[in-house]
Length: 281
Length: 201
Image (tube, rainbow over all chains, first blue to last red; front, side, top):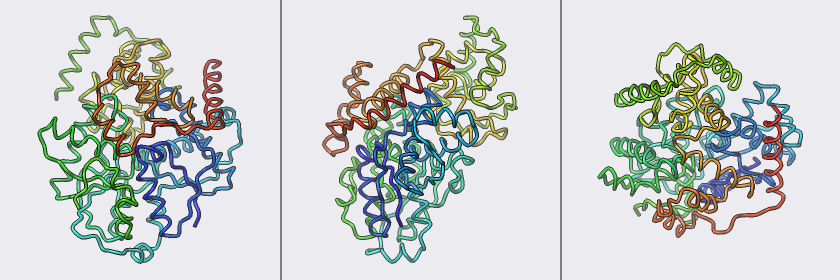
């Protein structure tokens, strides 16, 4: 199996461990990834807060680049990029004028034949036996809650990804590689996302609730699929403890890192050492 | 609960500033921009009940939608509400009338800036501008450059210094941006063409 791969800006810096672990796990499962040549930023929230045309043109430009490289399917691990790609496709499908404007702005043709996939969709589409086959050591004592965040599922008519309020894709993938996955209430609640650097207090308030529920159901790890969710939950945990007088120490993993650990990769190979919240040995 | 009190207080402030003069064209302008009909809203308030940020807003999402329907342009465009929206899409997802509230929040920000209004939550707009400049110049987000740019403009030099240092030592922030003239050319062209197109329309 071969996919074009759009890492997005975060996976090349703050979310580097998502990139490393996704590649490692894919390699193990015989999935070939080829980075989209010359990809640029998807524009993320600053673009859609400033210009609808710009916010649509940047993702479509990247899809046009993928199309030019003969790709049929693009894997997009960052939930924010994934959301922008799918929204752009949805919007040009609904609005003929926008479609023409976008073509003019990106200066290249776009057939719209490339499919945008999240790695979770790719892994969930594999036969269960194939995932189970690769498990080297069955993870013990790791009770995981899966945090999907906002953008994988919302808005459902655009994203078409699992159940909008209670998705199970990540739960199933992690269960299939041997983890004990717990039920909880904050699967798709907002972490404050893009306010990380600007309205930090809001981020602390929202992340505290997420960590609290994870702790209350007895989880000792949170799995995420978005570099912003990871940054907020991981790097702000000490700030949250200071502000709310709490003692959270819950490691936040990308789901690909948890898969990799079960497949027998060392934590270092998966970039687990890059986390700020220390991982218990 | 607290939101309700804050909102009615600020509503009174604005009333004294005569911001409650309806603008007959405003609702149509908004409907055309986001291609939804805000008149479909029957004020069930699901959008506001589920909004994770409503506590930080001066009007809850349903109040802002109602103000749009009343044509209260000045009140809407001067509001904090859209600047405190985290774009989590909960409102849009849950609206039984399929009013795309999150899109309306974006459109309100864009209109406010176009009208030359100084956003009441300046940090968010400053961040957006810095991020877009960054993307235009580097083709990809260069995070350390973005943080530096932001600090030069907000003068908050020491905010999150410790965190930044920790992330740096963990190798999460690249010192040197990954540069490619071809990539810069790609984003530069897209940005300029968008600007030109939006000026002409």
